[in-house]
Length: 547
Image (tube, rainbow, N blue to C red; front, side):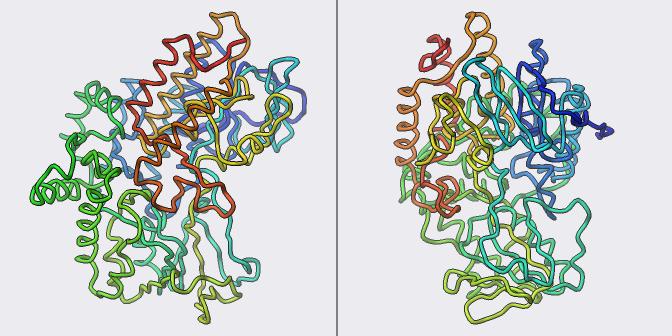
């Protein structure tokens, strides 16, 4: 099902201060639902979006093969039963164009566009203590005053800059998966190089290899990738899910990962099972496709011996796909636990290295020295290229927030408050920044839970907090320093009880030079996190100060 795309309201031409009850930064899944909820509460809200269309990460990431690694029927809004029933997905794992069409349909169906301002980047948010209001500025000269500010900026929306010298001298074309051009890119007859083999690289490499004259893949760290198992949507399967959506959503909301459509989460430990039973479980999840391994045995991310059983299973599967044993060993991950870096889901990724026009360059032994006019210099070898693609990831979870000049009480910058790593209470608020909410921010399950449902939960929590604040007769809500400190310590302690800290991943900020190493998401699972959030509300917003 598709819907016509209408234009959102253009930016005003003057700098007269505009006044709203709430400003929302970002028009992705969280921003659109936040707008819908606030309008339903009778508040005047405005969304500001840097892109010229809605969609958030699915607006920007248009690279070939871009797709979700959670089933379409689960990676979708649950707040409207009518919406769930009317939208028909064409594939099991939706690709970017279909997800973007779905988000545009939502914007039109709920008439959200009239309160969305596109092509407008929020550059500053200052808390005016004398008025208890946020003063917002944009790159188009807007001046906005709002009582509440909701940062729905997304976790993977601040692409890492190119870290190699010489880009301006390159005579060919440079592309980045995170801001891919809208027009199709034709690689026919081209010598293409791609730097990075995370999720984006793994998705686009097989497609580009089919078109390019030659593809050179520059890999620093091999990642674990499982088959996506994508296929056209089975109409009977879709009807069955829709007939039982309420039960599925309840199961997702009561799980740690939010992925339950095909396989239920496992409750047993790997080391309590026989080798034969473990093999059967791993095979079942490998064949299921997607990220179902995150719902497997409960000790996989806590016990290194248990983790090694699934890691060795995956390594064996990878080796079976690649003809050249030497290439296979370069692609087999080692040195970190299975799942400690974001698991990837692919379609024909490993088999791509069996093609005659594909070459793998190992950067662990010889790193990239720079970009030359003709290509990439790796050690003493210059790889001549017509196109260089950077699939080098994001400044995850904090980058988009710190790219905005956010200042709270006493004109204190968020960048100063987070100078040694992000600090928050429940991942929703940070001390000294009243009425400033963050969706799926650092300190929440965030990227390790179904992001659409996680954003819905945060939006609903924020909406409830605003209603309760109004009923209390208070003007503002903010977390206390003590609650923030205790929660940040808990997030760190739980993280270090898992195997996630044994990998240099973006979960810890390790992919960005100079970024403080810290446990960014809450790693205790969504269920315990949700229970804590509900307990806080039941206790009269324990850990928050209302004034």
